[in-house]
Image 1 (cartoon, rainbow, N blue to C red):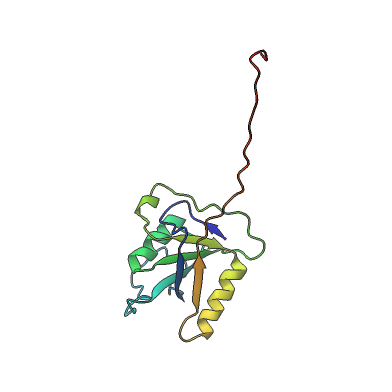
Image 2 (cartoon, rainbow, N blue to C red):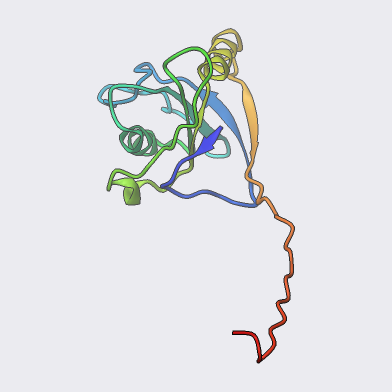
Length: 146
């Protein structure tokens, strides 16, 4: 997976929520979209959106406007997903929710699970902060070295 370069990334937190797939799977237009109507205020909603047609930031902002708490965008092409950078196109400052990118295979699996599970699948996302080992280096210099 790849985290976006815009929006809020809740490092050190855990997000548990229900995955929902919008009627318009690309989420480039939210007119008439009602996927999050009548939501339980105690349940976080994670929208699963397909890549393509419009920019990543537009998809995330549209999901945010629908009331989503997180967006998972999956690749629109099957096979090995290259490293995708979800970059800010200048509108990323409007995004206040986290978003991430996953492979087509993972997205299709989540989508099919969503169709067969009447209560929607619940997922747990943990935003860990990777800690690197720090190497201390001490350099000794002699005043005679030039």
